[in-house]
Length: 354
Ligand code: ADP
Image (cartoon, rainbow, N blue to C red; front, side, top):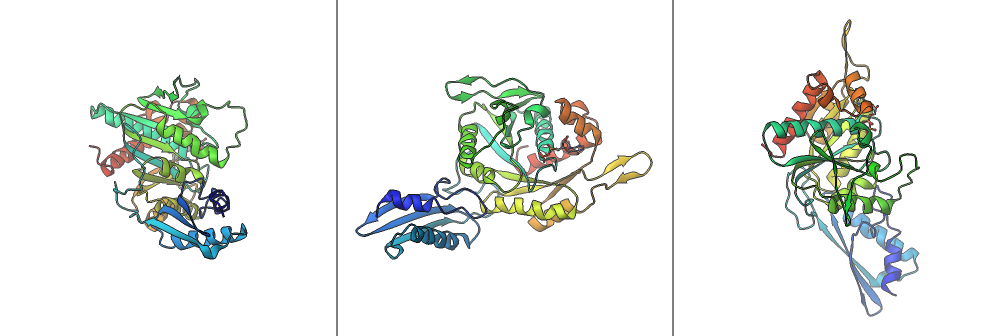
């Protein structure tokens, strides 16, 4: 029995709900050989009490499959429960905040196409305007972690590449927001097959090797769904809160809940739910709920968090994204912009930036 054989066997154990294995996620804290046997220590941060047993069983099965004598391998799990609804939870296993960043907020959705990036982009612009109005010296940032389809450069009208000093990326800046996106670093036409380990690597680079300066708030646009990125980000940097974006269909709420559960698992508090494309204002028939109704409220209720607001389905929102000037900037007095401002104000209140 040697450490490498054990480690290789443990690479077969997937973190529940993810395609990534527990070794690449850094959960194997120690392996020490002891005579004919070995002691393995796994370390997890979770508010899910069933996870330690699940991991122990899965690890035993993987070691057994690798032909190791599991009776002589002792697996200890250091489990650090994290209350999911408490802000700024101090915990030894919570990674440090990104240097200079006071508050990191993740924007996530259960599935693609619900307008998550649109919400992240307009929220960042609304936060920047709000913080500027309050004469706060620190800035706002936007980190586009949507590695599968980074749309932030397009939505911000940014087409240049960031400078690199040594191994540190210098974020681009527009509308008072400092922006970093994978979209800056890849060829737009190149197909991106972003493999699991690269997700972690990129997110680590984005959290440790970007010259953000002093930011009051950094908004992170995560890829849709329950893939590796939320967990990778949660392990790379302290996330102060997550916002879930959903559409109004009640069927969307089920998917959104799944996305929200992920944050609970990694001990990130939910700040609230934003419902997008909630209604369309028409001249003749008033408000029309073209995509159904109830999804946002249902998601907020089911996840025990706040319903932050309903963003209308509006041409100015779509045009803003397509033209590279988010509607909060291009149409600051539109009903949609008013809602983004209200959501930004509430978010600042919730993370205690006044
Ligand atoms: P996701 O990030 O969830 O995949 P996007 O933010 O890229 O979704 O939005 C998908 C499309 O829907 C974009 O073309 C965007 O302009 C449009 N869109 C998003 N929200 C709205 C809205 N409230 N009103 C009109 N169009 C919207």
